[in-house]
Image (cartoon, rainbow, N blue to C red; front, side, top):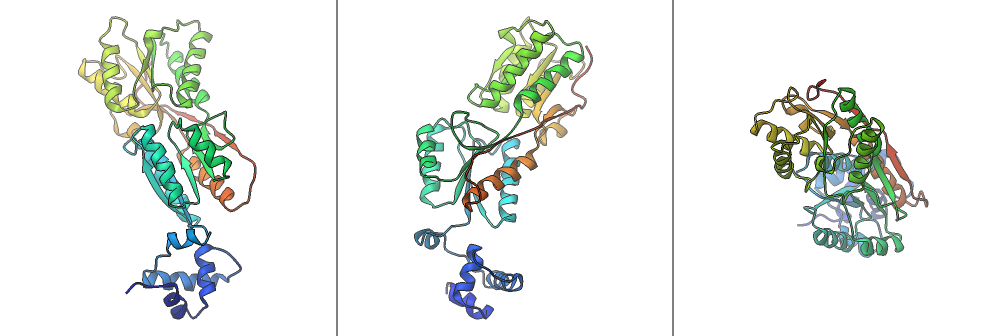
Length: 333
C-alpha cells in the first residue's frame, strides 16, 4: 500500500502541515523536527507527488538541465556538478540530452515546463529564441551555462572564452610555432566565436599569417575531430601546432597524428580546452585550458534557485577566469 503524507505525520508525531512545510521548505520549523520528519520519510520510502504539488501551485523542488551531448566529458562533468549542488539545496535535477538537435531541444523545453519543474538550466547552443522568449515573458526561471545569448536578458555562467583561447595560442607562439591551426565547432556556440577571435588576434599581434586553411570546422565530436585533423595533417600545408577548442577535438587530433605517423609533441604540439578527464588519460597528457567546472555548476544552480525563491529580480552574467594547464603535449619548435 502506498505511503501517504498522513502516514509520515502519524509516525513522526507531527501535524500534516508540518510535514508539508518540511517537504516544501517553507515556514519555521526547528532543525530537530525537520530531521525527524526527513528520517521518517526515508524510513517509509515516502516520495512526495510532484504532480500534486504542481496542481496546488507549489514548487516541485525540481529543476531541468538541458545539455547537448552527455557523452562529451565536459557536459557530463557539468551535469554531475549541477546535480550535486541541486541536491545540496534540496532540489532534484532532470537531465535532458539533445544530441545537438534543435527539434529535440524544443521538445524538452516544452516537456520540462509541462512537468512543472521550477526552473531550467540550458547548456545547449539553443536557437529556439521564440520558446525562450515565451518562457522569459512568463518570468519562468532560466539560466545558461557555458553558453551565452547576449541579446537576451538571462542569467549566464560561463568561462572567459576569449582569454582562455588567447592564453592557449600565446603559449604555442611562445614555443616559436608559426603554423598554428585551430579546430573548433560550427560557430553555433558563442564560445567558438570568442575563441576564434582570440586566435586571430594573437596571430596578428605577432605578425603571423591568418590562413583560413588553418581554421578547421567540425561537428564537435571526437570522430569528426579525427576526420578533420587527418585532412589537415595529410595536406602539404601541415601545421606544427593545433589549438583544439575542445578536449574531445584534441583527442581526435591525437588519433589522426598517430594514424599518419606523427609524434606528439615531437612532430606536432596540441593544446585543448576544458581540462576534462580526457586531458589526463591521453598519452602524452594534454596541455589544455581549464574551465572551473565546479564553480560554474555551483554558481548557475545558485542563480537559478535564487530566482525560483524570489530572492533576486535582476539578471546576472558571471564570467569566470580560465587557467592554462601546461602538460607534455607541447614543445618548443
